[in-house]
Image 1 (cartoon, protein in one colour):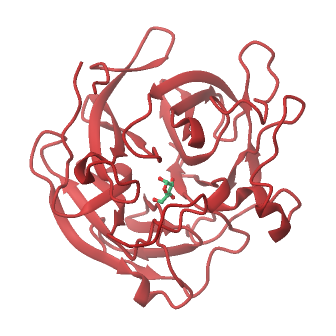
Image 2: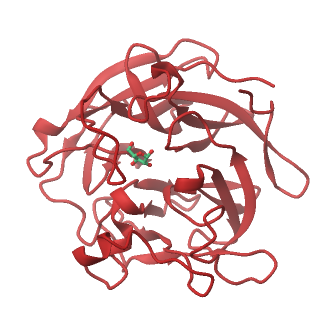
Image 3: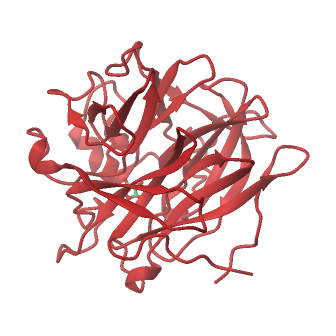
Length: 320
Ligand code: FUB
């Protein structure tokens, strides 16, 4: 049994999106800050204001370089508050940082990044994750329930009245789905209508039900490719698991495959999966650095492996 040390201790960090650019490992996390705002289901306590970029030139066991604040909310005219979980992508030598409802680009993976004047048309909710396939086509996954307000987007527009219902429930209803859309060649806009990311029960081949909180998507979408298969991983929210499904296309459907990580200290769990050199890593967070404060988290990393069936497991069992 083993638990991991935080990768970063001089600031609070969460929602780590890890990528290898130019052979170097980079992490693009949220930046948690202390606040007096009390915890609620809207996530108001996550009062983040900017993003730092970190590089790990020797992998997860070596030094971690903080490249500083690469984008602050004061530089983005449309942001009122809360710079939630970001992701980054590279295409044709340009680097793009995606954050909830906003897009920006730069010429170095360390930033800085310049915000586009407007959010991506047709985008909504939280937790963007960009996947660039082997053919160069990029896809943006996104969505989150409750504070991420995905439950308000079931009618094709923002329905504020649905916030109070939190989300559909029942064995007769399918769960809410994460969203995905292809990006345009320049990476700035959606190239198509937004689609739903369906997770199927492996036995019935039916979409996971709304009442199935152990397996339904809640937030923290991530896509990676292993051995020709697409792995869609996510947080189950109020049951606090990191889970995944496997499919033959970036659009899915994804057959539920199991859990990657059991609940960590703190309410949220949010991750990324990346290959660096010949190993695969799970980047994730918990609230251990702050002694369990939900909104003051720290990023960590651990090796994952795949068994003969392609199922993901932790190289070292999760510890207390
Ligand atoms: O960091 C704020 C929110 O907490 C993220 O957007 C969610 O995924 C959860 O980790």
